[in-house]
Length: 443
Image (cartoon, rainbow, N blue to C red; front, side, top):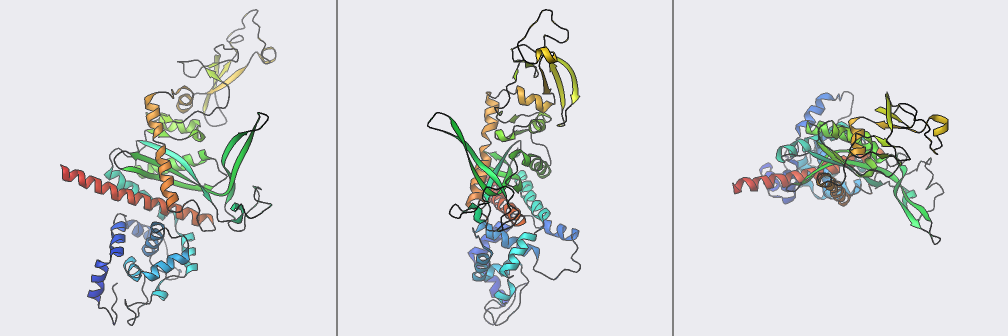
């Protein structure tokens, strides 16, 4: 609705809107989003008995502007809009008309209060934001050929807005994982970085850098021409391990793309058989470094046949369902199975008491890929190098303020994260459209 005022008529206001550079910039930005998602969301929701409030599209545009402009606090967001009333008019807020005001409406009465802006950020529907993010992925998929063939996974740390993260403030509970900070009871204590420091006597001492906060997991893809794209995101308290993010990120990625990725890559924190399983089932590989735990050595060129501690090839006995959810093959000492070798001796502790040692090997496609994958091939290195797409995404998100959100609950943190990734994807979509337009003009 375009109001009229004693200063400007409706036609004059329309001309002012069309000439204002800030309004035009945000019109171009928001034109890249699929706003029909809100109509479908409204059809699913029942507003019976709820108070009348501003349209959802106006709130979403306001919060996306908050990310785009790098605004940290709700008070600053409200002040920014107060200083740019044409944006209030263009975003679609329900106006409180005042013909004596310069633009025909009362800015202070139209804008929600600072408290209500914070409450609205907390109560935004997660499914609506996820659908909006997925729509940007679908739009990018139409612009970028081969998007999502290889997907990278990573987690970005985030500091909660609590005194326990301030090194200048003493708190007895700052390293107590059972403590719940008053500033943000939803955040959790986790380890950001763990390093081994050499001591004067030559020994090493583990040093851990801990923080109270959250982790923002992302699934990303990259192309040389178009850059980096966020396919999925998931936020959890910081005490969760990196591999915990994999399943929800993978499921969101498949839903957003409408197909399964061929390859995946991540750091060693994702070295789990079910991560490899996804790639193995779809003809690809998971380019993930193998963690240096365990001392099992396997026979080269075999499908995961282990060597015993004495270097002998072990004998397969039977398969069974492991309690961790995969099929396993049990291997036993070759001196005792399939038959006892006469006069055979071994100084292994298990030989005289349990007929030698035994090992269980995961024989699922992902389990076998994990132990047989050649991590020196050009293919592995090329796929693993794409993991840097997550690092570039994290760098962009940090510039937009994701690392230190000034909110005090998990829901607001999650919603700010999703809004941040929507902004990053819309920027990429704008560049992709511009690139494709240039290619078409060259042809």
